[in-house]
Image 1 (tube, rainbow, N blue to C red):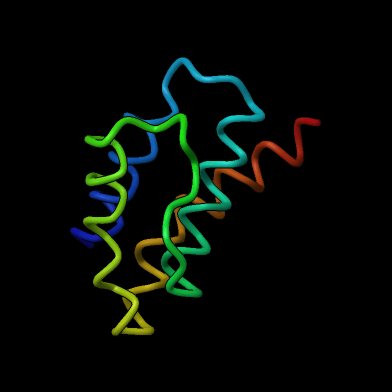
Image 2: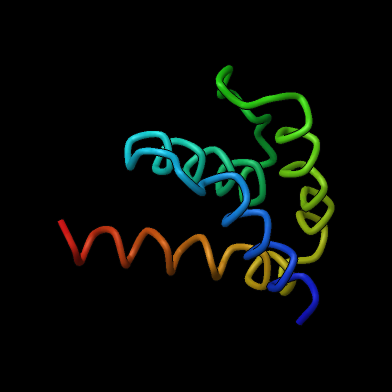
Length: 84
């Protein structure tokens, strides 16, 4: 699915080289944006990163697409939780 691939690409680009605490905050922010229609709250993201993340906010209107957009983020959190 193109949405899943785009979401995975965004995740890797934004989280590459970042610490675990930051990664968890970005992930929580992303999931809140997509699932609860919240705005991105992290001040440590650049304007370009916020624009990139919010490019997936349109899936909010399509419940089946929310799953496509969030699957990789949930997988990332699951992998972190199993390793800590």
